[in-house]
Image (cartoon, rainbow, N blue to C red; front, side, top):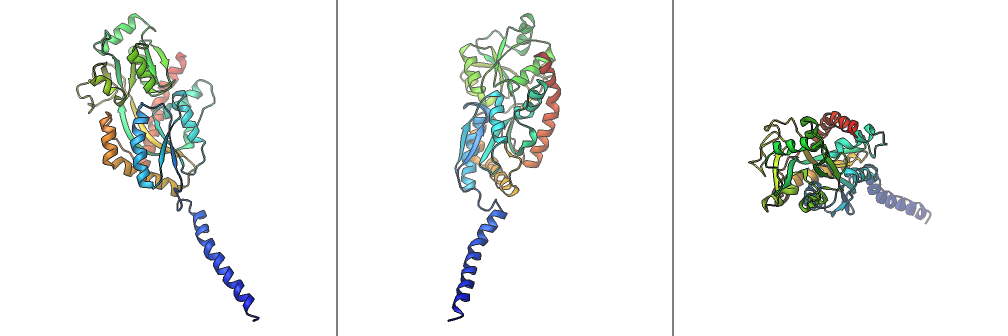
Length: 331
């Protein structure tokens, strides 16, 4: 009888330590239980733009890979800055992801140039995967008087500040390329910022603005329907979606820009969780359904894994710095 109590204590100790072991393992390996609930992928633009077009099939594929729903949350404003800042400052637990565009490279620098406190810092976000990298295209209405880029430039020189173009917001992916063209050709245009590519294209179709620079996926359906005309693109090679369209460089204008889309997470996310997200993103980039959806919208897949994408973003930030400074001097 005297051995009963110690025996019971020993049995209780074994039971408790047995239960605690998995909990201890999970606390020391946060990736083990991830994901256990719905994941949010923030798109910092309204529906209808490039980021949204890419995000939806990618999120669906990542849901299958991770075994949890990945839902889209559109959080537009400030050229994408509001949504990007939201993710940069979100809890770093793998449940808040960001599908960003190349405006991410520009916005913190632009805020600094303009004497504002940056909405977020580049170091607060970790690059996971690039999915597309489209040169933007110069689109005008099909009934416009401009048949070529030279027509557009010549008219802009005659009427400085009169020809208007829409963008997804100040220093966004539709603002920067147009200013690159303006800087290199010596013209002045009237910039009208919107909350995203979708609203800007709607305004172009409705006659409220005269032009946009945007990814082919955003305007391809309207080009095919005969509502819009494209005059050139900011790339250096032929576009698969618009193979007959000449680059601005080949037309004598030193203007180059790529609107890339990529997945980011808060930079302090535990590595084990980051690797699971990276693996799911890689699988999505190879998923035939994702490739079909993105290519069908007019964007070829241009996947880069985390290390390569991180280096690419770093170079993009450096390359855009001079352009952004010149834009700041004009404002």
